Amino acid sequence: SDVCSSDLSITLPLGARCLGATLESLAWHGMGVRLVQLRRHQGHAAPLNDDTRLEEGDTLVLSGKPEALAIATEKVLKG
Image (tube, rainbow, N blue to C red; front, side, top):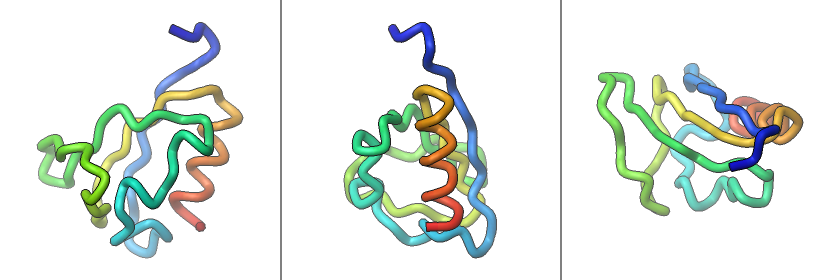
């Protein structure tokens, strides 16, 4: 695996730009990150299907280089 990559968890607040978006529509690979896990606010893992929609309180676990993670965080939270 890439030595320079790291993991980052982002919990989606009310008003995050990506709420209701499908996982496929966020184009993770285009940002240079990989979605490792999606946990619902109740704590259980959700399937990483293209049509899974993001909800308030979801926690995304992303893997990638720090610069890519910063870009992905900005897109997810602010659009």
